[in-house]
Amino acid sequence: MMPTDRYAVFGHPIKHSKSPRIHRLFAAQTGQTLEYIAEEVPAEQFQAAVEAFFAAGGKGLNCTVPLKELAWSYADHKTERAQLSKAVNTLALQPDGAILGDNTDGIGLVTDLTTNHGIALSGARILILGAGGASRGIILPILEKSPKTLVIANRTKDKAVKLAAEFHGKGPVTGCGFDDLANRQFDLILNATSASLSGQLPPLPTGLLAAGGMCYDLAYGNEPTAFVRWGQDNHAAKSLDGLGMLVEQAAEAFFIWRGVRPKTRPVIELLNSERQA
Image 1: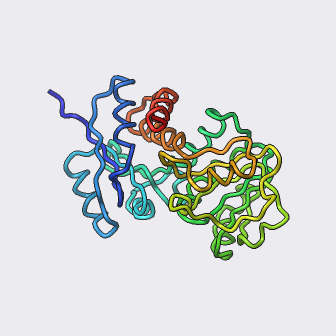
Image 2: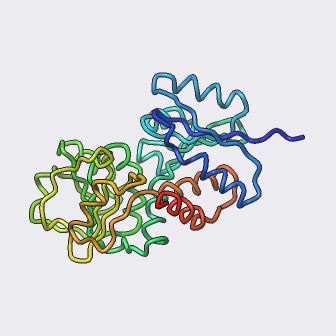
Image 3: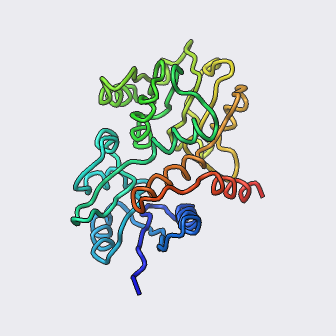
């Protein structure tokens, strides 16, 4: 009898993670036999925990906050999107024993926006709130969709400017402070800060969202986040959270590990119906 392939998500905190459920649903749907668990791993224990996981026969890992930069450093090889983002959320054991690092966050976001919600990115004026790790993973996949402009705004202006500079030559991306957003308008505003989960928001000027514009919070919860509510209050055509992105980035990781692409829509619909209940 063949041993069951083992996968896991490492994070701190991790109890709330829907990833084990999502990957078990993918496995059942595609006829794959695997085990996927969530494991609480603080940053200072990351190196030892990853080494132990792969030494014990593990095949692949997802890494969430605050471990993505550490996973980037750990990987032997990196995809271009991981190399540029300096953050890795997916580690995959290769046939030669090397560890490949990838970042599936951006492709997960873009797929959710364009395929699931019909939001066009080409020619759009797009704003990203926040210049941390969550922003890093989504910039290149958005630029590859040819937006008119991509602005990264952050409380510390220098951090946003430096992050934008790292993607120089990849598309029309600039950085600024929140204070610089006055009198500007955007077709799509993406919240890549974690603030709205605790009811906080950056200082956003009125009139920031263009008529017919959309809002999207990379975070998600059973209740609408503060940013989703801000979008609704500012008459967004759609104000969405990141549950679809979570499922889509997981599907990309599943494909990297198993070579099989699961259907995401039934999983998104199931998770949405459960939280609405």
